[in-house]
Structure formats: C-alpha cells, structure tokens
Length: 193
Image 1: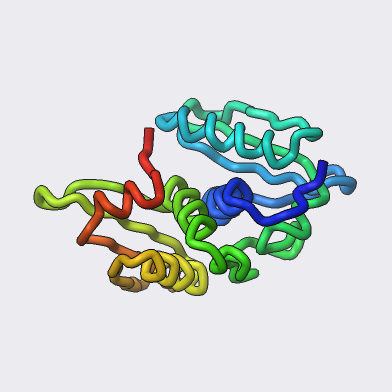
Image 2 (image 1 turned 60 degrees about the vertical axis):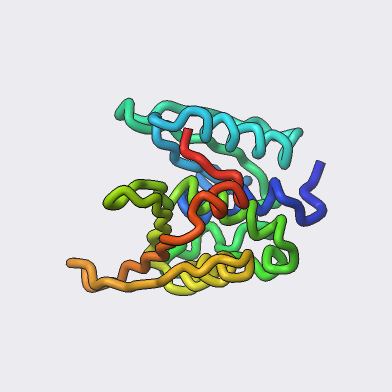
C-alpha cells in the first residue's frame, strides 16, 4: 500500500523525521528512513513504530539497539520516502538541504498539531524554569525554526524565537513558549513518556 494522501500520521512522522530522522540508500535499491530514539522514552518509540507500520503496512519496520544503551533506531525502507520527505537521500544533510515542513501541513490545523507533536518529541523539551512550565524547540535550520514558530502562532500561541552563535560558527534557533504552555501541550497532545 502506498502513502497516497496527506494525513495526521504522515504529518507526525515528518515532524519526527525532521528532528531525529536520517535518509539514506545503503543498498542502492530502496531509501531507508532511520529515526534515532532516546531509550528514556520507550512509549514515544512505540508510537513512532506504530505510525510507520500504519503508513507502510507492507514494509518491515525494524528496531535496532544502538551500540550504547542510551538509544535505539527505528527503520523502514521505501522508495516512497523520496516523494514524501522534505529532503532527499544522498544530497547531503538536512541542514545543508535546509529541510523544512512541507507546505501541505500548513493547510490544516490537525496537520500542524501532528507535525509539531513530532518536532517537540524530537527536538523539543518541556521543563520547569523557576517554577513555570516552558516548552522549547531547538534546531540549527533557520527555515525549520521559522516553520515551527509559524505553526505555533497559527494555533493561537505566542512563542518567541532567539538565535545564538555556536562554537562551530553556525546559529542555533530556539523557539520558546512561556505562556499558555499547558494549553499548548493539550492542543498538540504531547508528552515525553
């Protein structure tokens, strides 16, 4: 079965892939999406695995432990990935390709919520700062950070963006939400295990 239409499961997986995903074509026949998951969050890993099985019911979804017990990888092979992922295998990193959220996700709030959920699961954090609940999203790809800011604003929230220079000479972009955080967490149905 092919992924033939845009849906919230696909939007979630695109968010996950933009955060902790990698595309490659190691055997020269099929593109592999590999998502690296922190072992501290097994429920998130289970959700990613289930979403991939739903999107690619005829493809094997593999879970492989990393060389360190702190992470594991979830992989699926499919040439459909070339047309649904917002960057291409074999053309450099997501950073060099300036990967960003596909335009179709901005069409529906349910798609934006799902994509944000995936992005927060991977490159986000929910934490307390001086007793106040906060949400951060951090990335080095400016267009992706701007997409996250835009989606949060379209959902009715007022995040702030900042950029800091890293030792590497590249910028790191941080989207921070300090108000209505519980409402945002409920809106995108996110929690880290």
